[in-house]
Length: 135
Image (cartoon, rainbow, N blue to C red; front, top):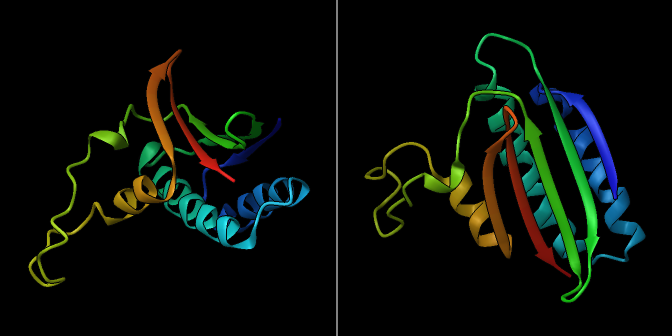
């Protein structure tokens, strides 16, 4: 397992992505999966950066670890921001045209479709979002 603690600032997305990719490369993770996980990082980290702490500044802990049986990785985001369960966001109606759809919700929808498992809990004063991707 590797862990990083970093300020929840949108400009740190690239640093987080590089941190995760370094670990994924050590597992010989295919580039296609790395690219999909990069989309997930961008969505989740930017949401935390923009919304978790309001006007305050805060930090995010990112953990990445290998899973066995089935083989894959678990990516965990932890923050002490406002409690927010992204899994309770209503699914966007993708049958509507872009002009007809309500704003928001597409990012979480993509994350749910990219990752194989996702769980959320608010524990010990922090949001804990765990996501697994099989390799």
